[in-house]
Length: 507
Image: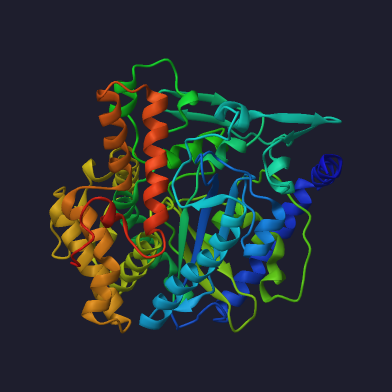
């Protein structure tokens, strides 16, 4: 297996970089022609969802490798690490039935998967960053273990995806290290990225020419939604430097997942993983993807899919890593669309919390665009600073906002009052009743109202244990075990509000 993978990596590395780029540029012209013809206009607003998990041993809660046959049985896809599994939902219209279908599909497939994983004495965990390594291993060894096969570097615990392994063997620079408060790790591969898992809502814009305006709003709402969703304040304990536990807890970033992705894959500034620039036209968005630095040019196989007419461009887009990014695709001409993929949010404690972000994101784009919300005038530099402040401090961050009446504010209550009002307005514009819209947004309102996020819950759990005399390792391990235990009772049918005593009364 390793020999075959090494051979495939070597084959990939023979792909001519300049020829690949030429094909990408040709594909871009195809997309622009279709754009001019209105092919990517698709007035029925559509939403989709990607949902990543990691697996643990049911008894010990230690990280567990997922057998490839099991992934096939449960209908999930492989991700970077052998412990990862990913689900993608079927796109649905943005209305009451479409959102209900998204949630029902996630629950149905996850319930069926749990039946299989239970037989394997495993659990699938929805979380931002794992902290308990496999039994008998350290996280450092698990993330850095690799072998060299005739000059080709192969990560021992990485899925057999040729692209991921090729990144460690190309001349193009990749960071391959962790850079976070009190954490240091260098690796020979991009395997440290497998620490993190996320959810990724998609929103299809009705008219492709309006993509820049929608995208501008998506970049402005990224920070407040990130602040609500932070869920990765801690790393596996053996990755920390020799620092007093109290400092590690107090200085933890609330969403280390952001820093992990950036430091592992960025080797220069500005990096490939970053907060996205605004663009003035859909054509400019296409050019931005074309001109992005290529890490690994890959051989391209084509089928009769519509978007295989620009297959090289699609392949390059796979490494166009922005926290919010435009997507041009569609299996058929009638399904062709321009959409926005929202990538800042970590996997959440429950399905309901995860779907709440999908609903909030879609509702906000509907309402802010339709009502020409003045936050579109928030300077890009401020939007970027907001984003990284939310990464560090979650709901405690000072975020700059412009309310619907044009008032500039850093008041958290004013910001989220405006945000939720427009999220609800957007959902109601798509046919949801007042009660239906409120129900989708309720888990996130509870977080803002009571100043509690999954990351803050984790920080409080670890801090209390350290104050009681526990070591950092024991405190993080006990917190993580409690997180997983609570999730087993609420993942399908509860919400994070149940964890913090707020789940009995609907807002």
